[in-house]
Length: 153
Image (cartoon, rainbow, N blue to C red; front, side):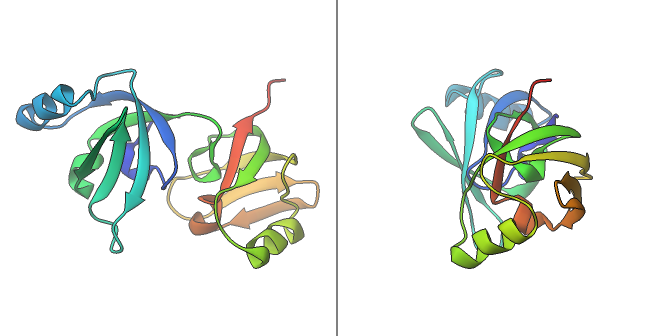
């Protein structure tokens, strides 16, 4: 699934595909190693969501929301459920959340090593998945903390 860099939650690693940013910014980023095929990690968003810190190799850079919306990337797995396209996935872990988060996940049929199917992911709003307990709807914030990888069939 190709998404914008803005759509990727914290802790996501992705591959740079393309960008529609102005030439001046594009030249500056390319000078810092932002080239197609490079791995970018979303490190942290500011409390209000703007700007965001990204990491390429050992270089950290801050980008505004409007700039990160112009950069197209492909999430690398394991990745948050929030950026997973339709398909079957294995849950590899949870990125945050304490005991209550894990308990809520288990009650929803989500556990490390569990298999789920993404039925619908509009990248805005709730994600619909199928678990052994049936179909459930998961909010964006919750889905950003569940890491998955595709299951080859």
